[in-house]
Image 1 (tube, rainbow, N blue to C red):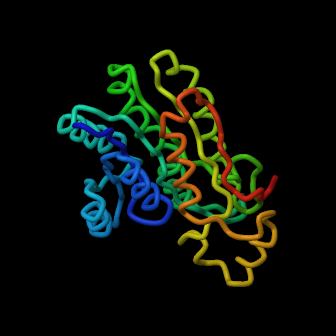
Image 2: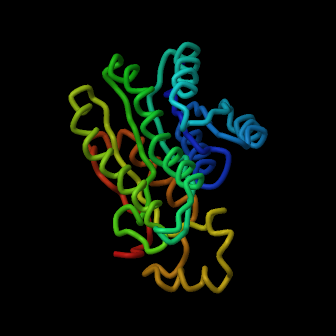
Length: 240
């Protein structure tokens, strides 16, 4: 393949879709991973000239099978963007087990499964780039989103620790930490709530999916070739 290959999880909508489109513009061939919305993912993949795959990333066996399939076809994996995530808002002591299994299974273990699956190929190639999508709540914590904050804080810890372990193999690991981004995750918020969030942001607006995609684009580029183990906040100054 004459292009670098990127894998983006949670790529059928929102931030993931924006990342897939931006990386395509940057010259990557993008493999889009989704859990449910495969028809939409295929439509986007057709538009950008990529490929769409359906996988439950919380299932380690399914992830390994998928990554082996991609590698066997393309013989390279240059970039992994661990974007897939779900939100969960509830009092900490009232959290339901089913919701917690989905939250931790997707946000944390899904990221771990994807990363473990691609690393052998990257280590063998002595080259690779992993970009994790965390959250401002992983940096500062949020009331009524304690478990969500825990998963995103863990992603930040993973980024910092793994970057030290795989750096000698010329593999970079960084993290993008979005603030309040105007996506489907805000669908439960009223217009007034969104206005209040914008007012609480020093740049006086909600973030756009392209803001996060542009940060990923930078970390994926050779311009960032000497950057690893870092957390790049994309939040307009929110919660700082």
